[in-house]
Amino acid sequence: MNTRTGLIFIVIVGTIVALVFLARPGADLPVNPGSGSAISAVISAGRQPTAVIPPAASAPTLPTPTDASSTQPPGQPSATPLSFDVNQLQTFIPANTLLPEDATATALAPDWRPPAVFVPIAHNPWDHYWFIRPVASDHNNEGLGFYPFGSNGDLNDLRIHHGIDFPNPIGVEIRAGADGTVIWADKGHYNEFESITSYGNCVVIQHDFGYKGLPVYTLYAHMSAIIAVKGQRVKSGDIIGLIGATGQVTGPHVHFEVRVGRDSYFSVRNPVLWMAPYVGTGTVAGSMLFPSRKPVNDAVIVLINRATGRVVQRTTTYAGFGANGDDNWKENFTFGDIPAGHYIVTSRFETTTWTGEVEVLPGTTNWVDLTRTTAVEPAPIDTQQP
Image (cartoon, rainbow, N blue to C red; front, top):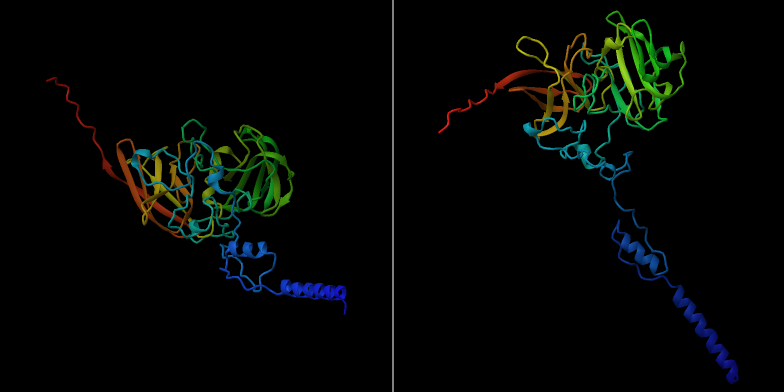
């Protein structure tokens, strides 16, 4: 073998050795399960790991909306629960603010809500949770907190509310609360009892059931489009229209009313006592009365978690004429969708404080009577000059 042939042989052998060496699997890298840095190190080394790496441990994916902290409008209250301060009773806290002690608060966004229970449901003989919510659970189906039924607004500058509002983007489907017949599907609302234009596009359903021998109706207002037609038979959950901003509104929503006895603006009842509460929650209803047994109107009511001492929700007593109490309960305030537990209910009106306690059981109405506890007399003013 000459010199040239020998050199070629050496080159070939060297190449084969080099290829064998490079193709040999590398030593296993230590991997911390769930560590992205170890996986990156393997990939950057130009080879795949020799062992299966378990996926990173994480909380299950939940159908939660966008983090409230990233969309909180300027000047709006924080979703963080606040300690109770009687000097700040007029400060609005969003309904159903989750507390850190709540089990769901550790994994769910603050504005997540559980699904509503199936209807009809009546754990108490006086209950009538017969309607589903007019908006499905994949959109906001919680009533507007600062303008509940019977309220005249947090600044006392709005008409007394005869229903509840579900704010949502234009085009979200509006659904029938229960089986029935559409008796109105047009602009405004006109019959022998009323002529109202502020409802915008509006649908009214007379339901297949009554209450104490009286007919029951639901009204859905401010639609961008009416889908149902007068005379149509609808089932619970059927789409009857789309959310809009027609009529007299400040933003897109569906206004929802329950009417008993006749299809009239002055025959309304509080929808919170007719819609199914969320799973694991109940409704608080109560009365706040003067010694004469007349209702105290437009007083701020505060609901406090007894175990934590934190405010859960605020509302007001009904502000006056037109906001009717239930035929049985005869309440003048409610709190909807309250997690099961023990609560203190308190109010300060003029110089008097009212208090009560209630144990909330899920899926039912839980009653509380507020009683007067203190009457603060104004201190005398010394008019004598030294």
